[in-house]
Length: 584
Image (cartoon, rainbow, N blue to C red):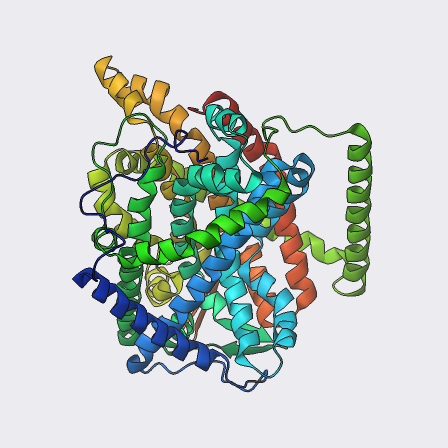
């Protein structure tokens, strides 16, 4: 039994679709050749990653010889995709758990709020020793720490998107799934993942760009106070910036842009076009996204042959998953016993109390409670920059995002451009920022906001594009028939339709902006050091000086501010968007 009736736009049948029988086609040979080349490259990179290595045994910078750029781009791209795979698994587990368990939601969602705003540098500083101990004497430990940093730039946003999609699941689809008595596995694979596919792909694409943005912070890890540079584009940027080598930076920027465009053409674009099959509406979009790579894959027979071979395995997995039972209870009706709630929250508050007491004693022994004063003031200064950034991003990018999202033809060309802009590391611009600020006399307290915007504003744009693109075509056609235009159309259709997506984008942009304070509040280039008054600079300096207690204190202040704002503002807006503005 399948849920084909619940997903209206199921895969289109076409005479061009491959048949499982017959000989190989030219497209098959092309696909097989590409697969062999990709396998050889990945095996070569994994062999380099597993070389012997000890902390302090590698230089704190990499060669800036431009001939190394293709190799650096390959190493970085591999890390990015390993981090993306880990983020996807994390998203499925944690997002599913939070959406289906009321008690888990009370813990996981605030925890995600904290984690998405914790700077990459802080997380790497806390975990790098454990990763190196996990793979002693091998580069794998340092690589694992780097991949974890990339993972932290991707996972939280994707998890929020998946959780939000499950919370906004159309009720008629939920009721149909329960009437069909689907098992929990069937519900996951045939309803929940397909229903969340479009926002997951768009947020995955955005998160991928966010990870590019933080490359320089991810590929230079600090072990026992010593910086260790891993071969990659991020470490190349840092080395070229330190040398103030404009020509090498320009070459690096070109390789970076080419890499981002190739990843978009070969990976994200096909996924975006493929995900249109999961759009839930009764009329087909007038101009659906297209991908030449996807069209080519649809003309091959190799995937169909592999799928036919694996079908018995899939049926066995389906039968094996029946042990988890059927999904007979709606996730919209999550209830719990009072006794269970009392035990759960007692244990939770006891754990929080023990953690707070342990942290207080640690700070008393190390930096002292007086350090909270300046750290809090710096947190307020950074909060001001984050709020300004978010307001400007909303005013600028909401209309642009709606325009792109509601025009598939524009979206086809704008998507790669936006992705390149969102992925461009701020460190590439440090030389020009230093020159610009020195020439104009503007301090980094103001100029740093622009650098932060390079990494955070795109979350708003991407989520608005995704939300506007999901406005059902039949509703838009009804508005056209009723001649509802201008502000009335925005008020009655567009703003309510994009509200849930915008709130998710604003929340992630808020967290991303805090992360971007690390690259926006401290700028080093060619011996010139600029620094703004803010928490990002505080954490960056503490990390460079190996002052773990200050890193932890700065992270704690940042987490408290973020959670407070999320509880007081964002979650209320999210509930309002879910209950009043959901179109399903």
